[in-house]
Length: 577
Image 1: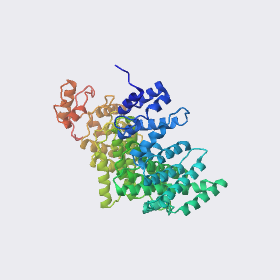
Image 2 (image 1 turned 90 degrees about the vertical axis):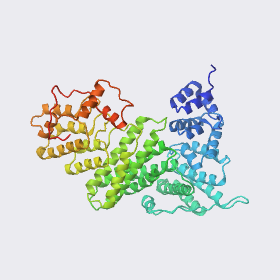
Image 3 (image 1 turned 45 degrees about the vertical axis):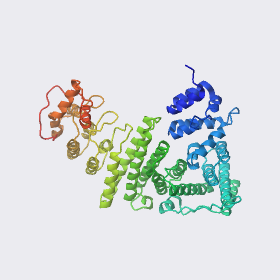
Image 4 (image 1 turned 180 degrees about the vertical axis):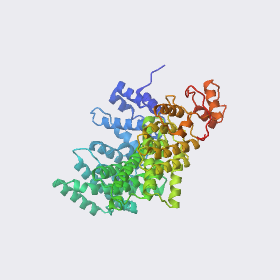
């Protein structure tokens, strides 16, 4: 059999979503050979990069774009680099192409290559205007040192070129005036009462101010206002695209929004504004994403920053200005968007090339923030009105029902049980656990160690003995235990190390005299016949796959054969099974 050419090997790797194979090809044949071949099109007229975009292989896209960036520093690099970028810009909207090609950390030479390549393509005038405006924003947000000031001036020049294209057309062409963004209250809160610069004269004034600040070495004084202008321009472009067609979130717009948010949160510590910028980012999670992987990470970061801002605000005095955005409305919005983010992560995790471990961690982080939002609602706003109660129920019910493809294992109940012993208000925490059960969280869900919420609760019992008010709070402990059992929690479901809840309780009974009598009685409980049947099916290896309904198959799989001491379990009516 004839060996495959380098070009065929590259297309094979892209079709199989294998970054590993692409790395091996690069190592074996070298950058020059690979670059010559990634400019070749397949029978559908696609380069490997365009094919990867169509297949939504985001890891492969990142790898190929990084190759393009590396090649510009190689004198022997073939000129196919420009044709690859041109083809991308001719096949995709400019807003989407820039999202794949540009990051805020890119060096200026790469940004110039992208700009020159696309401007020399066959795209129409209106597309060139959009390109210049968005590339201007890319230069303004560029973080590469020591060329930051030069990048900002280059960004202003791009905006001037776009303005000239708008208002100085060639023969038989009409002007394309700017249709300014209609700001919402959320935008005022996020960026202040700033309007977009709309005329060439205003742009020239801004350029003069920039040069003056650069000469006086106080460039950073103008940097913030330039970045707000860049955000307003991109927001206007994205909003107007949405009015013409159903568009997903724009990746480049999200990147610069997150960049600005990080500066506001970490450097300027403006927590109220940071919450509103987070809300603008998270608003985009309502749209169906064409780049779910990249977008999911940005949405998850915004949700995390929002939770951190709420945490900082909780430390402020009551009724102070610093707590003004810590409201029930914003916490409910956070829950709504957290549900959206979980959905985008589930979508991203379905992509063949995705790293399941990264999405598992990402989903766990979202779950942690969702738990915090609910906890703060119960703590700070215990008397929600009927409309707010319905919103809370709707958001959490939807969150619980999301069919997550990644192996997220633990659920909100695990987090609530983990935090139960640290709580200063056990009655409130009981209400939260009860509410999680009410909206459908599974009391038998197993975490990464195979432990259910009941496993975690049973393990915590020994720690409760150290409490001064042990006798009083033990009632809360048993109430939660009973609550989980009443909701269908299994006492005989084994963890990864073979321990059931009954095993754990028995060990704790041996370590602690004066064990809680009701929990002590649970050790001698006779389990339902269905549990013994499930154990027998597994013990005697009775075939059941495709012979039982899915609900019964799941029930059987929950029951591994685990010894629960040496003596027979006896009936007890104190614990209701």
